[in-house]
Each structure stands twice: as C-alpha cells, then as structure tokens.
Length: 54
Image 1 (cartoon, rainbow, N blue to C red):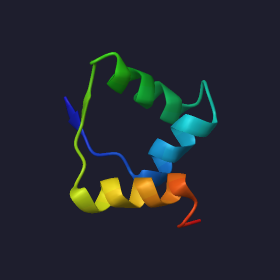
Image 2: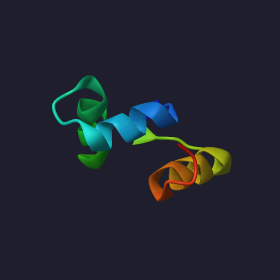
Image 3: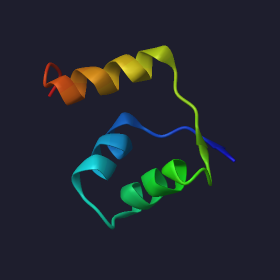
C-alpha cells in the first residue's frame, strides 16, 4: 500500500513512540507500507530536522 504522510506526522513519529504516527513509521520501516514523498516534502523534512524551519 502506498501512503503519503504529512510532514508533521513524520516528525511526530520520530519524537513520540507508541503513537499512531509512530505506528505508521514502524510499518514503513518493516516494509508493510510504502511511503511516497515529493522532493518538496523531502526538503521540508530536512529543514525541520535541521532546525531551519520550526
């Protein structure tokens, strides 16, 4: 199954374990779902993780 996740969901999954965003993230890591992202979204995630876009 292909899934598009909002940037906030991806960041939330990295911050809080055991939550619905984390469950989706773990499903992605386990190969149960395929996350589809655009180049723009990848750049946004990088900016947020680098602290340049809070």
